[in-house]
Image (cartoon, rainbow, N blue to C red; front, side):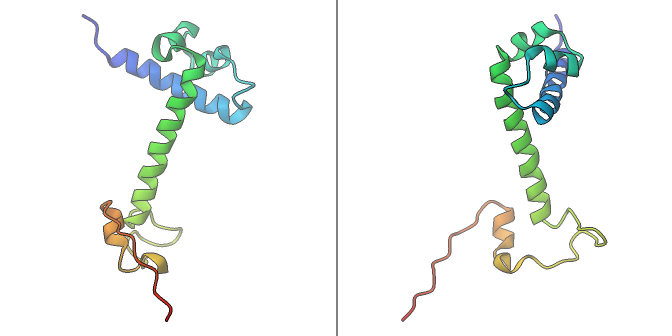
Length: 117
């Protein structure tokens, strides 16, 4: 029986190739052949892994969103230093002071607006 390793690797290559093509050409000007050529994959593998070229951008968006969310979590946790500073050296932004710990853990609570009286 064949393992899943080769299929996952091929799928990842297609996603990376699609990212590149979509960035460079946009969706309307990207063909399935472009994606296959850029990724070094067989044209038929797009249909095998995604059903069609049309399904591929959704997977690209999911992957890009997950990468962006990871970077945001790292930045909020102070793990991604700005140029010239070490991680954890800076205070949270003014709007997050006192609440940044709950945001990191996904338990942010809405605060009520102060009443004017």
